Image (cartoon, rainbow, N blue to C red; front, side, top):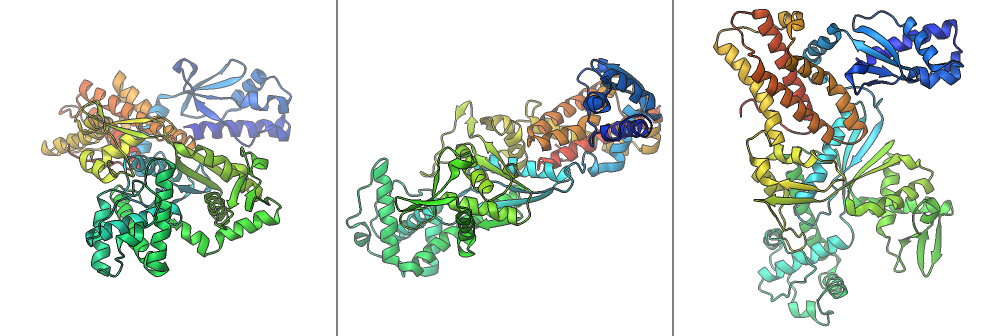
Length: 586
């Protein structure tokens, strides 16, 4: 309806421009919004105030001239001029009922639009270090990023989903050493496992795979490994200890064998992550390797471009990027004294690569602890003559699990964490997906496991899905009683839906496209969750207030069935955007 009203206003504007207004007075975009108060109509347009100066006309006077020039429409019952020059539109009964038929005609297409105009968007999300199974925190990133990508696609953007695999650097070295030491333990060596190693039980499983594939060929004496290694301990001690173990492991294994151990570890973890995400309904279009950046010269390409533009300088043996000149709090080292490139060098190169792949908008979904990362990468892009607003970052806050009112303790490195797979096994994919996005991404999430498993109206996923299942039950009952559904007759008699619950439900259905557009524009799938919960509440209320299957009034029965079917379609459309199923029985 917003598009219809905007077209009416555009037609009126064109008529006035051709007769009495300056040709350059008309704006390119006409904004129509729903009113917050029904007393002010159903929709409002601020066009008169927007163009009053260019038209050299008082806003209220211009609004009046526009109203007089509006074409006739069966969907507009009345208009009024309010405040400084708003044009308020009151819909006709036909317009309010028309949404029901529109839903049945458009089916899965209802709520979708082309407002994104095909803009290429690369959504990078999850991108967890491949050092172990995904945990519940990664699950929130997965659900949020995938839902945002779905919303952007639904509003006409050209969306590409990407997982950045951090398969180079120190964390992979720690994973490799952790695996090798577990392998040596299984071979009978006496190992003092480092406090900074990866301790999860999954490391034992990978060690078994390594042993099965390579036997004892990778065994080295523990005495050689730990001889003269700095003592383990707290803080800096554990860091020096693990770094010394990495260096010793590389020396004792040699390049080829070290790569074998690292490859087995990385392959197992990545296969596990891919399988987990696939089962969760999250399917990245591309898995981009950090090693690929180095091997294909992408990092050197970005650094060379910065060097050519005079954005790099040498100091104290290191190479620095003038990040502070582009909004960062300080300059950043991109090449250390030992010749190793830093993470910031890889990150800038990766984002330049995204832009060079033709992506207009780079939407990164990152953990809340990556706040400082944003200014650094944006500085790199701007220094490389890329638009500052080509990078958009959404930070996702942490997740706390609660069971029986008690917080569940988790720690990634120690291995005492709840995996995404374990969470899914306990509460199900649907509850996990919806609970993860029912709060804004920038708010801390307390995930109530007991609530997620409950079958009550307090559980939003159950309550929303139950609306769909209830409609299915209505149509099964209709068939069992030998009655037929006549959608055409139902659409012809929608004006008989006059009770308060029915009219409120119809009005809520009409809001769905606006909610999808709002949720996509704000990268806020929680708006859609709240909407679906409200829609389900109105449907359940209507179901309890008015009997749908009437034996003696086929026109009213079919009208109510049409409304139920339209509600079901919108519930399904919304759940699909959130990656949640719509079971037919519950």
